[in-house]
Length: 496
Image 1 (cartoon, rainbow, N blue to C red):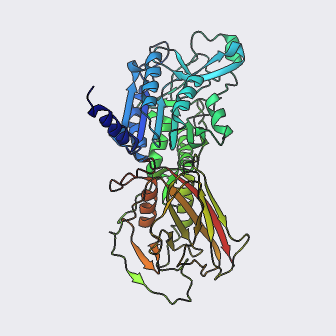
Image 2: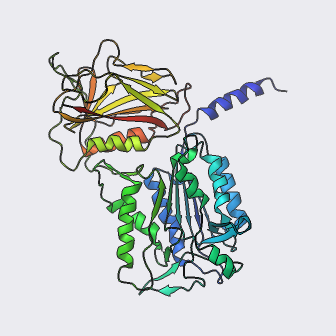
Image 3: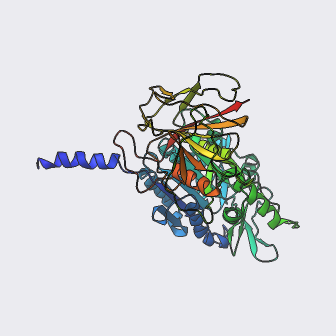
């Protein structure tokens, strides 16, 4: 045996362990069903629609795997799911999309009406099989988003008939199957989806707590395919990537904000029709997590930091350097976005030295503990809502690595934090990240040891991007797993 082989194996293992986690997508589209099932002509557009959704989530085309039509008989579906699951690594962010017919089948001796995806050969991939797929990857993924553009209830459509709504033609995305008897169809009036039940349980030790599950309709409704554009809900969702209002003015669109926009578009599309009624787009799981960052137009280039030296007696935690922020920006909501997008498998505990309200000028101190080792960042937005204040790390505390389960008291020696005017609510965000974050794109100034990022739409985008994505400049640290995952704790502090 070659004496170098064991060493080579160890080197390869080390490289594999230190490889960056990635963002990946698996896309299923079934359009060309046999005639007795019913072709969904619009689904041929949904591969591109889904690609755009994946891109909006930061997934590169090279990490998108697409299967369609003849590839997706029942065996092909199962093989594709297994192969994809085997390629998911710790910390990966995963997007799974399906567009095609949905269906139902009585299982467990008639005690449960199962829902599932209809393969091109007219068989059904049951929700229980999909749950097995998710169980393989849930405990590894830092974010898991499923988008199913199908319906799981035939309703009054025992025999699916395609109709025209002016132009173009739209078709229900449900197939009952020849084997479903009138008796079993009655049992299936109330389908039970084990996927949604698992997500709704929110078990603390379950990977499903990071899962966002989006369906085009409730399980007793019909969703539709439009022959010249694709699944109606998919199209509405894609359009809202450009038109959805940023309701909380955080600089990013959450799943819930896009859902609200897409629902309105769907209802407008079907308004005034007698044949069809808009379904209710359903979201389970982490509805407030960020789906898409909103790019800031005319973003300024990074500036060389300047150092200011305020009087010693002046509080330096919530100092305001930026001009008055327009009402279209809410920096505290940006911190909430970052918190909502945390990896919930990671626990960060924040214990303050004082309970109740604070007063202007009070010292601020707290202790941080994390279930995972990582790099600690403490951000604050004061009651004036004008700047992002980076409290930690700072010029007097550069080493911000925290070993799991060990407490980190802040502030450290040689520096302190006090609450400054005006009175009101201050928001504090603590992040413990696998990887160090790159803030070089943000325009900032120095006040004492702290970095102050100006409160602009550009800084909202750059901060969200730095925290939610990895920069090519970032290096993998052998002390932690190389992922974009982070745990977080959020605290609102009222100063009187």
